Length: 147
Image 1: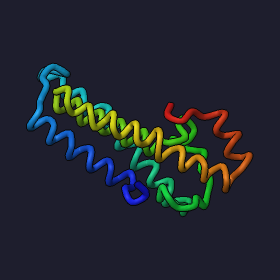
Image 2 (image 1 turned 135 degrees about the horizontal axis):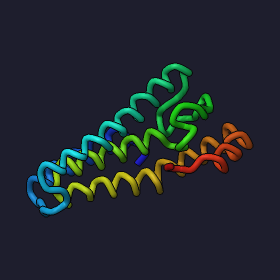
Image 3 (image 1 turned 120 degrees about the vertical axis):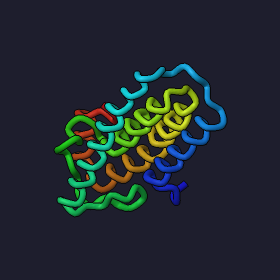
């Protein structure tokens, strides 16, 4: 699983949504034109992703999930979520699922959320605790994992 970094899982989930929608569509999530409401979470998710990526570049820190973190960021979207990138990915996937308008594209959204919540995030939190100690533990008490 260390080889499947979150951006690739994100793309894999989009492909899964497309295939599920194409071959196993279960109608009824959002009828036209209401499916266009998916633009809202998609846009918000992409905003979170790109804003957070810009922050990582600005402070010149490690973004790779399975590498040792270099700097501890607590501003920007990190004020509201300890994991704005995973939240951004999840919101973007939810927006795409809504745009399809069918039920089956929600399955990859749930899959991504579960993998992020029970694999990626605990791994990163363990690393953050090892590297930043009490500073991270204090931050962890103040800011929720997702929102």
